Amino acid sequence: MRRSARVLRQRQAADSKLSANSDLAEDTSVEPHLPEPIAKTVSFLINAEGSSSETENEQDTQEEHNKEQTQQTQNEQEIVEPRNPIINIMQNGANNAGANNGGGQQGAADITFTEVDKQQFSSLATELTYKGFNSVEMRKTLIAKYKTVKNIAVAMSQAQKSAMAKDIIMCITAYIKIGNSSSKALKAVGNADLSQKLSEAMRTFDIRDSARDGDGVTLARMAISMIPLVFLCSKMCKNEKRFNISCPPHLQDPCFRGVPEIRGTQEYKDFLEKWNEAMSGTAGAKDNKKNINWDDVAILGYEADGTQSAEMTRVFGINTSTSALATDQLAACVKNLLFP
Image (cartoon, rainbow, N blue to C red; front, side, top):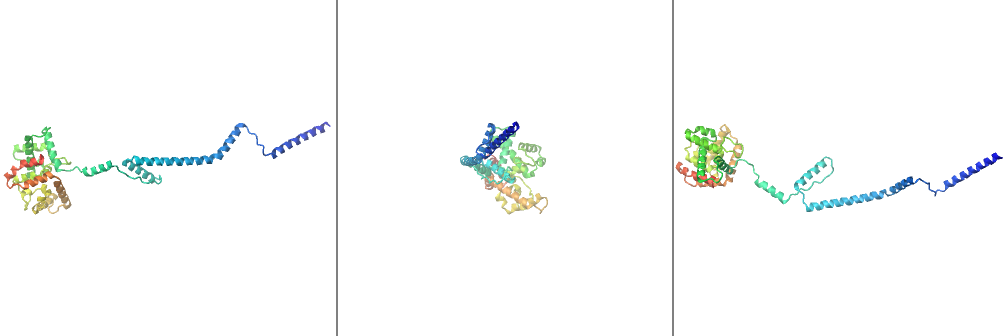
């Protein structure tokens, strides 16, 4: 009896438990109970997943707005403050380099110049010149060298100008008689006193046999910068002909090749032909291109030197038919060329 009663109670308890589980499975409205920390985490994840697409849309809209503001600011800066053209060129080069290196498409920046830039370009075009030989500058160099050697710090006096003129005439005479070699000119002077004075004059102007820069002084450069004086001194000297041709002895000098009144005569053309042949080293085998270039240089140099051309016109118009008449004009010629 006791055993039957105990078994009956056990069966009733099992039936009651099964009934409770069946009711729980069928009632889907009952949510499972979770601990509070886990419940908060689940709730956060659910809300985040539902709003992620809205957040991304808002971010895209904000980025587009920022880009538009940046572009508008850049456009305003370009209008108000023009960029430095050098910076533009550098930026353009950098952008092109980036595109060539795989940096993507990049449009070429516009190159702009300010009025100041344009004025600088214009100044360079008109004022920048090759610093070679210039007859006007050579005469200034002669004066500067003379004043330095003679310790003249102020304007030259009449006596100092006369002394300089005598040294110039001595050097030009040596050029006419001997040529461009200063060492040969000194050896050719038989009079010891004259040789000493000529040597001092050449040292005063620092005359060399050759010059590698535009300021260097040679006898030939001195002659080219004082062509009218060469003309008068040549008439004063008892010259022998350099070449047995019809050209007068006093015109047989290459420094006259820029003077149109002399260059245009047939006699002087004959002289230049003989001179070019002699300078080439072999008679009849001259370098025509080189000779033509020298002619162009001489013509342009003479035309650019208004002081020389004006003085040459003056000496052409006066009577210098004799040695004495030519000598009388030497002082005036030096003054007009060096101290106009």
